[in-house]
Amino acid sequence: MAGNERGRVRVEPGHKRVRAYLAGELVADTIRPLLVWEVPYYPAYYFPAADVRAALVPTGATEHSPSRGDAELYDVKVPRMTAAAAARRYPSSPIAELRDAVRIDWPAMDEWLEEDEPVYTHPRDPYSRVDILASSRHVRVVVDGVTVADSHQPRILFETGLPPRYYLPLSDLRLDLLTPSATETHCPYKGTATYWSLDADGRRYDDFVWTYRAPLPESQKVAGLACFYNEKVDLYVDGVLQEQPRTKWTEEARGQ
Image (cartoon, rainbow, N blue to C red; front, side, top):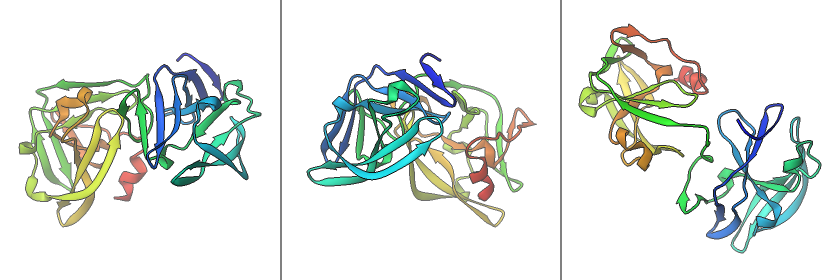
């Protein structure tokens, strides 16, 4: 990976125009974002201080990071709203690139744009790739001894850093075991997912199956197909039981 590295933090310049909005007001607008990998899974955006349009009001609070140093916390203020402690600066950071940059908390903003397209959940990682391939492999999904899906026509989604996900036609699922859920989640690569809960052998599993009904253009091949977390089910591929992967969803899976 290009860019500078300090411990677990990686930094490199981005090349997209990035904007953040709060209550309909422009908070920041830059063509010189920094991509900062504070966690391994995806980067955060840092804005050059000169490209922040909203008022940054000091809170007097600080927050220490072992890798980035001491952050000064700021309220982000626009005419109609204030997002409390939604910005931070590291003026004395050991990472030189961060000293004149401002990090805006992603969930504190109402809207984020990369170029002119909205992006959800977190910035897109330029090193993540999504490949979706049609397959004739036999996929069977079992929960508590009950076969809940059986398909010979999966679409397999390969996403950098994640186990393969097997998206199956709804006609290959036990739809009588599924109940629609109001839950929605958002993925910057695939779009908005909706969920079903599953009832198997007298036990209920909330938000257990998901689908992208209108995915983003790069993920159109999984439109209307359903998927299970490998971490939560017994997954058989061509008759072979697959090992349940350990991912950031593993503990959540155990809780269900």
